[in-house]
Figure 1: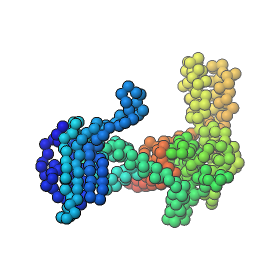
Figure 2 (figure 1 turned 180 degrees about the vertical axis):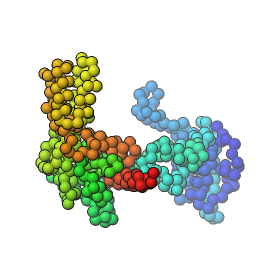
Figure 3 (figure 1 turned 90 degrees about the horizontal axis):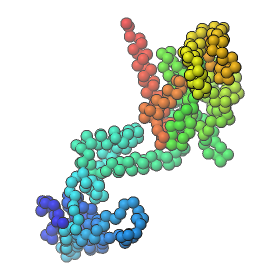
Figure 4 (figure 1 turned 45 degrees about the vertical axis):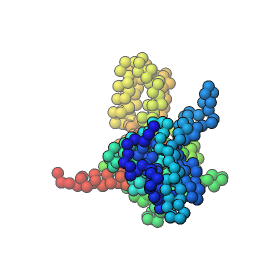
Length: 453
């Protein structure tokens, strides 16, 4: 097949003269890109350069009738198209000594197809810097492509493929993971240099490898001094490349907004790990008292560590987790006893004093004959740890569950601050972005609350 109709000025000709071999090569590649085929260098010497169609030759490792050994078959079809570039020593120029422009396969000059040709790929450094910035900000692939589509006037005009963008992002992620711990410690040192009240603590194993990390920014420590009476603690989400549980100490401010007092990435969720973390939190908040109340789920390792470290702190269990623990048993009871669901929740949520709660509970149990039911007994035996009526003498900032910790964790993950491929050093920087965002929102609320009505 002959080349498509192209201006004579870009079609190789014996009359053309070039100052260098590279210039002649670039000319032929430009022509090939417009014609719609790829180029392969088949011979290069001091005075000679041969360039062929990338479908030149054939693949010897597959024979008809035999099983395929790879998913994609070879594109080579013994195309004979080529040019031979030679150097005229006497006159010091390069020219096309021989050429064959006919191909034995269809050509594809469409921009939407030629962008897949290696020779057509042109990654503008300015555009690639925009791409890298979007990747660093964890923009989705579709968002990145949509922005580039606006810049190029359509995806068909890209000088690269979408797979090139994915590969670039993956390469950047691999580079980020290299020397991850030194980069993390470098970030901590940078924060410490900017503000001496920044605090971090690490725990290493027997091989001197970091396994647990806790840190708290100066603004977080200040928030704890003001609002640290009640803390919720949770390790639900694993938003990083190492699947390390994210532990967060969360409270509420004077506007009942979530505030984060400190965060940690943990190797595991064992009692000794939590004990180390709680002591690190204590060391960080030196000069401030321990929380009056700490709310957690029913993790026994957490409970044991809290009892050892926060000796004067009242430990309470998350009401939602308590009911979730018995959810299947409760569903069976709800099916057997009409109206039990609403009445049970009313008894749990509305009594103002422990006496009122206990009286209402006894009345409910007697009404439905549940005195010997194991589920009801389990809820009753641990009532002091999770029923709101027993929290009345204790300031809890309207918190009866770990919902604040879980909502902060979920926001960090769903809002694009971190993801399952986030390395530790980047995770710490993203947490700073999140803290700055929450501080900005809190400042806005404070400003508007002072506006005269």
